[in-house]
Length: 324
Image (spheres, rainbow, N blue to C red):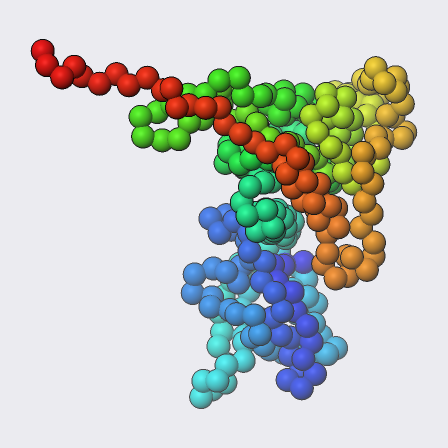
């Protein structure tokens, strides 16, 4: 199915589909943003979609039905307007998947909420997996967000991999000295080390190396773990047995032992320090109580242990001598 990166609702009076929401992803990546955001499309929330590829939509025939087998193809969309002929037609290229666009919108929404509710004091990073994509996502935000007083790391829905130790190593850094440039504010050494509290949000969909990250975050005493008990599958696999028909045989190969629970993460997961459930009514109302709780806890931690820079008043002044 070709996708438009937008939400529609049926308007019975117009017998058309009203645009309720247009997904905002990465505007520079056509596979990670709604086609309706393209230059020249000029589609706005509230516009009425009346036809797809010249075929009229109706109560019995939705736009999605007319977009079957149209993935990655250019399609013609007709919208109702106030012009003399009453219609405006545009051509856009559909998406095969909306996952990247909706993911970016979700991350940016969480980041914006945290910045607004903490007056910019707390940063936010989401890690979708523990592979190349997750490693890149972490560093896409971390170098900016780590400059704030505190940090919330979100590993909900993490699909696993094997880079958790690299991320934990970076999160465990603490400033041991500071460097100054002539004109800018001081920055800590090691660079991007956190002087304030770090908190992690996890849930029942954090799996494999997502389990390990969540459990080791507690073991290393890096901060508070909030959310739901993780998925509970940390046995790694190898998949190097290729078959002549193109298939692959996978086998369990690597198990994990921890000093506090031994082999106990497998088939159980790790418990959060503070359990927070997202109820069905929360989903329906677009609420995120896990994120809200994380903001509440980290602000309390900042209040109890505010971040304070050392006294730099004795900074040496190496002026030129008054006379030669």
